Image (tube, rainbow, N blue to C red; front, top):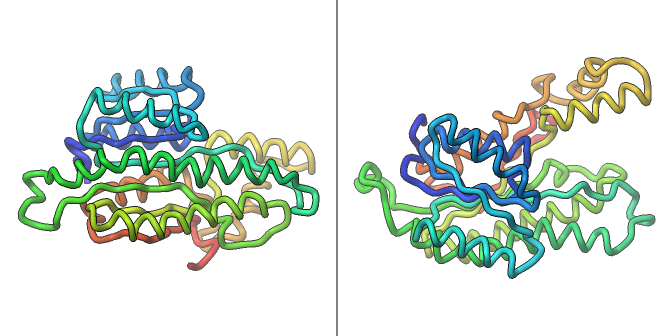
Length: 274
């Protein structure tokens, strides 16, 4: 797997400082040219510098996935560097409303759907020609085995598996994203484009550690206490780290997953059985 993305171009939309950064570094490590795109352009330059410092190739481009013109501009930027894209990861995220549905403003739900679902659709629509071109250019190593394909991976959430209070708005958006992935897999499959979703549970990185610190201060105890209480729900009695979410995404992007499409992979250390 050390060079499973060798010679490929992977576009990461919603490349944040945690998951997105780790994905960019790991994809570049496996030989991909990485395009990192997000609304906060200042974060992207740091990611590109890290990738290049490690010997990889990376390009930064600002994008607002809720704006069709912005998504189109991203595709045009990528087209200036390559005529084929082999992988597209959609992980744009905004902090959801954490209120019961009875108290949730409809506009908040609409914004969540616009970013999570329609943003993914806009991006896939724009990049479909480049993804199709990527599927039509097999590696020499692959020519004698499985047919070439390109890959779209959409980041959902394990929230799709439960109906806990205050998560309803987020669940609505992420469940719709999974349904979108199913339909796109059917429509784009004949063009050699695979579409899958990954549904992570907790991702134990700096953001979640900060939230656990908040909970420890609010309710008493330590971050370790909050972690242990949360991990009790997992079969493995621990929370997955960023790399443990990234590596399944890399697998779905790679030729090793050439026969996998229309699927949702839950990565949560066994909190839910799907």
